[in-house]
Amino acid sequence: MKTLKVLSLFTIFLLSVTTYASAPSGVELKLNLEKGKTYNFKSTADIQYFADATLTQKMMSMKVMMEMSQKVADKSRDGIHTIEIEITRIVVNQEASGMTVDYDSDNPDPSNPMTAMIEQQFNGLLNSPATIKVNQQGQIIEKPEETGQPVSIASVVNNLFVELPKEQISKGYSWTDTKAVQGTEATLNLTVSDITKKQVMVSLKSANSEILEGENLEAETNGNITFDRKSGIALMSISNSTVKGSSPQTGEFFMVTTNKQELL
Image (cartoon, rainbow, N blue to C red):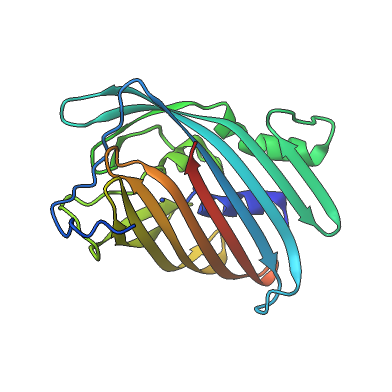
């Protein structure tokens, strides 16, 4: 399977969050970041490709690590955050057909044609800092334009924040959010599983069927996000995705992905 195809499907990942019994209602979850502060995140994806539904015939594995900074340059009285986004590091390990490819943006190997190709694909992320504006609901109201590249800072920006509910929440409260993935949309179903004095825990589920770059894909995702109640920022998110796909070039394939993002 070509590296370009893997990196394109990696955007799905970019599709990169003790019970407080006395809070049955009246809890607000709003984005309220500190002006001038820089929030640093680390995201990882472990992607496994298989040729069969029993997940025994592995075709390829790929691990990706990405580090990102988000600096709150300004915040208006009505809660509009101006945030400077920068991808500071990307590490990739890929194994397929007995071959291993390692890439680290902090120490690239230009003599290796495979790592050079990976570097070219991720160049739109590493060398493209961007400024966005986000409101208190986590809705991005201003962002950079799409460049047309398979992987770009604009595609990452689209999925940086979960849209937060406008209403006050309690345990069991549910809402939906829609994310863009390579020209298609994925709907997340989110449910408040727990509330403590400092955190809000949310479970997420998603099931989508799409045609992506000529491939028929069926995807299911389950995971959890832990939000900080004071700032509304996602402290930790973990999700597991299973994708069943088919294409004229590769036939049937299955992809199992574990994603994790944490605030450092």
